[in-house]
Image 1 (cartoon, rainbow, N blue to C red):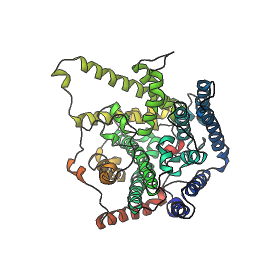
Image 2 (image 1 turned 135 degrees about the vertical axis):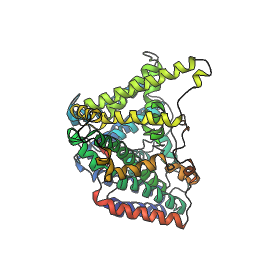
Image 3 (image 1 turned 90 degrees about the vertical axis):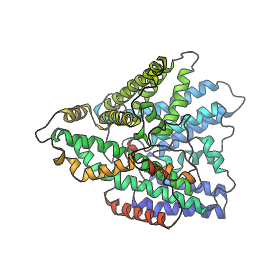
Image 4 (image 1 turned 180 degrees about the vertical axis):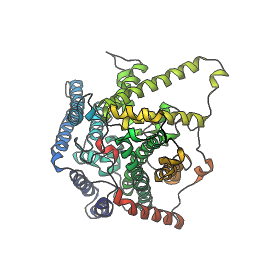
Length: 495
């Protein structure tokens, strides 16, 4: 079931919300939590009921591992932890291999609605790994089976995150007024959901057909057309993924649950590290805490920061798939992050005022986004042949290489202009809702707030629950309904 489908928006979601508050009022918080588990199972199995065994296996395996680890008198805890983490990793890797093989063209980016791997298996596996590690580290003192089910299955973030932790969700499930109807949360959560739905349906899905067509036949496009398609993919990816995050945070807010932020203006980043802190934040936070630190602090086989950083970046490519394009994308990310790391260390050795010299923030943003465009070709291409052709089309002059006759001058150009306006001129969702923002932030370090965008004055725009904002939200919802007939699945469903 897609969060952007009429079935979800107009049937499933109202029933889920109404049932939650009704169960909370009649039966109490535990009954309401049981209702969340039931509707979450319905939501998941609606996509493919045949994958029910996958969900049952991962839930049962990790719950038993955690129950063993939480006992104070058990032996061989470290061996059991290694078994649990290795089992989860092998489980995920097995499905990735089945879906596309290893170093295989079939393992690249896909636009098919037929997804070979079980839905959400990557996100579920990461949450399970974090869960059993936290139990081993004594960050979790008790495990309630119903809380555990709800933590894994919570339908707003089940499919595409953000990645959450049991230690963050468990206290919220036991808050004294968790199931109480709170008008402010319902209104703000609804607005966040509408904004996310607008990002997905009106912007991302409007760009998608041009991107799909361009990557299907890149050898027929002029350089201008190819640049439009490549830029279109980055905008499609951002508004598709961040739109889902806004929708998930909004639904959770209606249900009085705080989820972590997952995006923070990534295309305003001034370098690769800055973008890493802004893009898919819950994923980068997981990689830092559960991969980078264990590698860097390992007593038997310690890696230095450079080596650990390289491994983390490469593994981020493997997480998406074992196809050659994803592997090279991860390798390129690793090299670029190492270069950024070494440049920073080199600058620190210089004497002032030389080490303080740097390009204006706007130029750094432009360079970083340009690199992102080039990396995006690898990520989006279904195979290396396509990626090679795209790169050739970008830099090989054609006979009709005119800007005014390119895709930039057509409907795609209009959608890109709207996307660029939202990306570089308007405030982010969390800035607009700053007075009402309650989403968690898993980052250990905030991004470099050095570039306010092309229209700095717009950053003062703030949401207020009044009539003008209600009208605006109503118009945005009307646009979403109009565009629902052309909606497509979320990109990250395939991962």
